[in-house]
Image 1 (cartoon, helix red, strand yellow):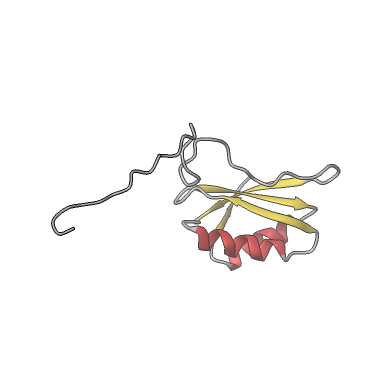
Image 2: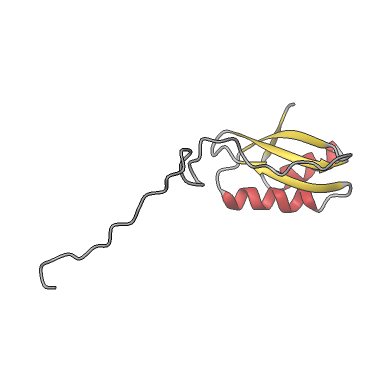
Length: 105
């Protein structure tokens, strides 16, 4: 095979919305189950998956929080969805202690 290329042609994904990292569909945020409320916060300063994991972990550990999910907008205003009955002041403290800003809602 000296000087020749032998490549296998693979089919491209046929999904009309693209791959998981650039999908044009709405985010697949976890939905609250019946009887469970969800509170939305805006967070500034998140730029990557590590930032997301940090915030989700800290907020999930708070009393009254059943779930925490961040819809990341790198370099912009990300959306933090908190399931359960979180204390807004505690959420703000958790977010700011991680080095991010909870934007006014």
